[in-house]
Image 1: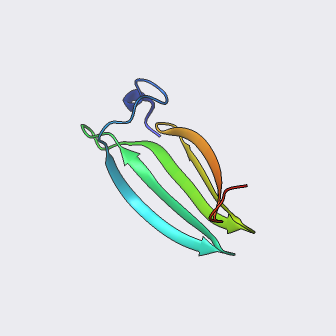
Image 2: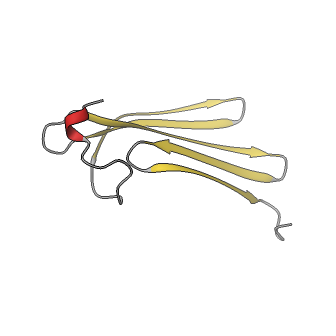
Length: 82
């Protein structure tokens, strides 16, 4: 990670370059990773990762990134969310 490129941790999301995007599926879990690049010098600013899975009757989503922040969400896949 290029410390000189990070001016503010977890800022509002703006346009940025993305590279090294990969998608893997393991045990019913979808994992997507990619690198955010500085649009000026193309150094890697942060690594972005999110995971999606279905557990029983719920969809689960998690995200972790120095720029985008961290988040978790769970929602029912049933017509009426309990």
